[in-house]
Amino acid sequence: MIDPVLLRNDPETVKRSQRARGNAEEVVDEALAADASRRRALAEYETLRAEQNAFGKRVKAAAKEEKPALIAQAQELAAAVKAADARAKEAEAAFDAVAMRIENVVVDGVPAGGEENFVTLREVGEKPAFDFPARDHLELGELLGAIDMERGAKVSGARFYFLRGIGARLELALMNLALDRALQHGFTPLITPTLVKPEVMRGTGFLGEHADEVYHLPADDLFLTGTSEVALAGYHADEIIDLADGPLRYAGWSTCYRREAGSHGKDTRGILRVHQFNKLEMFVYADPGEAEAEHERLVSWQEEMLQALGLHYRVIDVAAGDLGSSAARKYDIEAWVPTQDAYRELTSTSNCTTYQSRRLATRFRTESGRTAPAATLNGTLATTRWIVAILETHQQADGSVRVPEALQPYLGGLETLTPIAGA
Image (cartoon, rainbow, N blue to C red; front, side):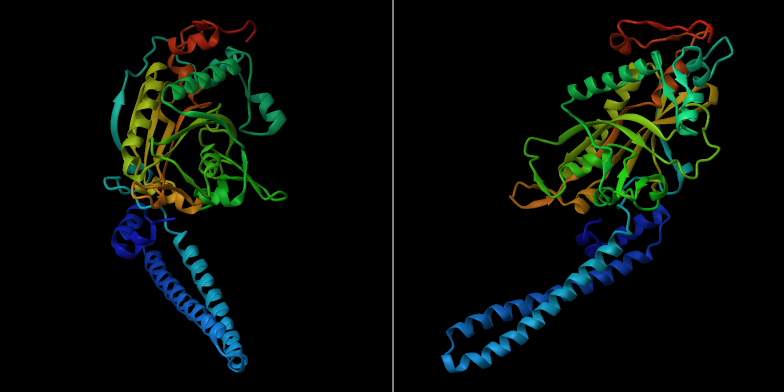
């Protein structure tokens, strides 16, 4: 939820953000009207409540013969207070319903427009070039006995797969490398629940326009998470956290589930766009004044990982219309996939400012001792999809794949992945 003080004092900034996202700005005026009604209803309730308290003291001090009439008046006043309380709560709910429709206010400098209007901030490394016909990641995975799509489809349907043999080991190596890097940067590791309550899913902003991407279990009214960001955002819900010593950093390891609704025919070959995968997600609670600097730190740690794996990539500043509802700014890092002659997203890193924490009631104490909503940030440090870029970038003419030096200790010192006999 956006800051109601910002909405009230600077509605034009909120409208400007809505326009940049391609969203309707009329909802801002609706929210302003609902906020005014809410404040009037609350003021009426507080005035009547104060009268009730004062009248109660008068009743206590009254003479015995005066009390019956005063008690009758007190009962009428109590009924009025009860009705005013109901109106205030109704007005509060009406405001919340409208305010929830306003997506996070984008940070100054975020490009306006849609998916194609991103800005490339930098390209790093050399594009891989081969003097032989390059194989795609699925062909390489099958040669190595690492990926089995056929049996994945047999067991679970389209866009499911088995990682087997060296494929399973490669994913675990990648995740453990990322975990060690996260530990070096002060992250606390968590293995998170992958089923969450509706209020947590809603609080993180995942039940908006992309709700059709989420798996729902109606019998239990629980949602399967598409990222551990959801559980990590809910971890400190309804709490006052201590940020006196700096940001709280968590690294959430989880299996993730996405329906990929509306993506039929897109990237369906191999494991680039699938329904289930593993991911190590960085999640940070920070003082809002430090959020933009923390955002840059998260990106730098992601870049360290990609550079250690020898991948060519670019960092893009995602346009406002392509941001999720919670993100005020998002940087994507896209690795080069040789056989597609294209960049493909490997990481996203979002600054959600106080949007999620307002919904989930996560606060911290400021230097003055008052409580305020914390900022939340998130960013991928490793995921199954990275295997696509690793296999294709480091392939050799005979179908073998060189293991990046950073991964070798996690694979028992293995330097090359070699095709299995009969593949």
